[in-house]
Length: 518
Ligand code: UN1
Image 1 (cartoon, helix red, strand yellow):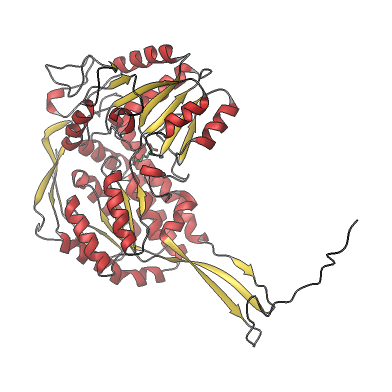
Image 2 (cartoon, protein in one colour):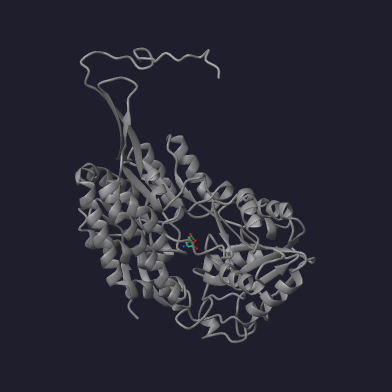
């Protein structure tokens, strides 16, 4: 299998040397297979990249928006022409099952499809003035230079949610992808630069570890080289990045963790709910920010749901992500190690189901029907934990990995309270055949995204994506809503009366007859 050599690219030139050291990005399904040898940068390199982006920004903003839209169109086409190759690389590097990886690449194409037309819109408004011979207008201006820092569970789709609209709006970009998905990142970067014919400095990529990135970002912000930060990752790091941006009077675009609830009501279609819980909870080995956290089941259907959910989970194929499986490996060893800690939260009052073991799947701790050799990679058993309740770490905290909690409720108000209790607010779902329940849940739940009779994951690429509470600061990505992240409104008033007309003062007023009564 081919092994790539990956290094940062700044102002169109690959960076030589590795001031931050070198790491190897391995295939998590076959750890002996190195996918990329990655040269990491240091904080100074991030600052250099920000300066290159700053230098290129004005000329990029001067390219007419419809022309930038055409660049996005060409990027989308080139990604489409390379869909299988990029998806294969995603599967090899982070272990996402191949059909899901194809879906991930499709999400880039969909994002380009949406924004190619935005180049010909990017509408401002004409607004009437309160005075004659005066006209008001609004314009969307690019924010300037954008730093995008992304996780590796969606190594190409989620970055495109930032990068495509940022470029379209006339910003230049420094992208810091996850180190463990560097090969997929490098491929995407090349497709974007070549496909879009992007001038040097418009789209830069820097590989670096987390602390180095934070230090470099701080220096770049201090130097006035970055105008906007986009970050997808943990709530903890998101809070630190949000704080850093805030100190520079900026608001970051944050897409953070989730503890996404699924309510199964008394009148739910149980088969559908089980299917949704299986995909939402264990698809991508539970490593989506939208993955199902806790099933909140009406007490009258709890036993039936749990039995069927456990059966379906026990029977689900796990293993080689190129085989026909529900899920493959953990995306990186650090996620497997953290997942084992989450499993330590299981207490004596919990009932564990879903597999023949818990934790790492090995020859000594096997999983029936496993596809491939578990010892070759980092695979974990799916785990259902029944009887979770507020105050349990496993109920309150995000458990990134193949783990789903189950609890019960009696009234819909209780279900909403349980759904909101962990304090996250990314995605949520309700299975019901009662429209009133669906709308009451929508109104009460704190999540930015709500599914009815659908799982918590699998949002379409042109609806607002984002969360509240510990899941984000209310920023939204995708569709028209993300334009407010990457543009600043400018208001223009133009007085052609030839005299100074003072707002609020030199305004004509018609005389109403306030004493009139019928
Ligand atoms: C993420 O896990 O960061 O809605 C994003 C979904 C995907 C995106 C997930 N379209 O599950």
